[in-house]
Length: 298
Image (cartoon, rainbow, N blue to C red; front, side, top):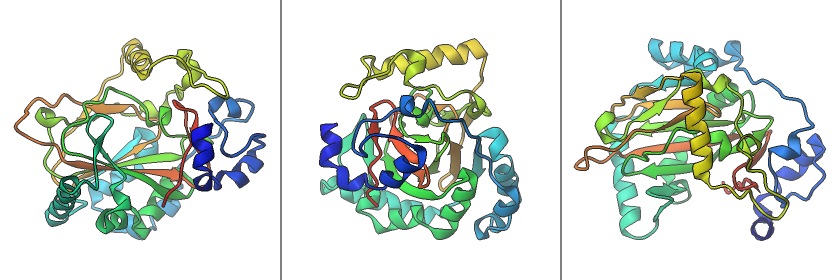
């Protein structure tokens, strides 16, 4: 709670939302899914009639349009050649410059966080009006750019749902947008995802006995969540797919789709990529695993 108190100016967006949903606690208090357990579940679906008339949709290739129309069913969509190779190269050079001058530092095992706070090109791509309008319809909400993460190498992250990290009430108010900044395949840490897995329940702290209190987070490590999910995938016989991407290709994924990073086998190759996360501005946004409300800094 002390951390939240020092950051409370960036948490005021939650005040009207707490009132709307009857959350009787201060907006800088710890929060988790247990605070919403008494509220009804809701289902989000993209309005296809609205989706198909957006300027963003009308400019897509036929394959990308079909992928967009299957988003609710599959939990992801793919747009090939979203960024030009020249734009990808420009981003890579800007990231390299910011690493070299100390503006960005590697955190959490190889992540370059929030370059959107320092780079106009990255911020403008993420805040593109046509993109956010399109994402808002996919979200059945109002998409707001929350964070960016740049990678130089593959994340090699185990299969997970983003909703353990970036959570909302109502559930599902998050989208991930991943862009390849160079060619990516099985040898340099490609992404994997499990189609249709967004239809599974949202596995949160209570599902692996990791609920905390108002003052302390749960006692279990994140590894316990990964192990819980690994066992669940085996139990259900779920099969992953690999996203083989060319420079500039884009993948959008649902808040609850299970995904991760393949091993980065070829150490002579990098795997430069960019991830944006968008929250639904009309939802309560928080971090289930740490029980912190989300800070909006843009």
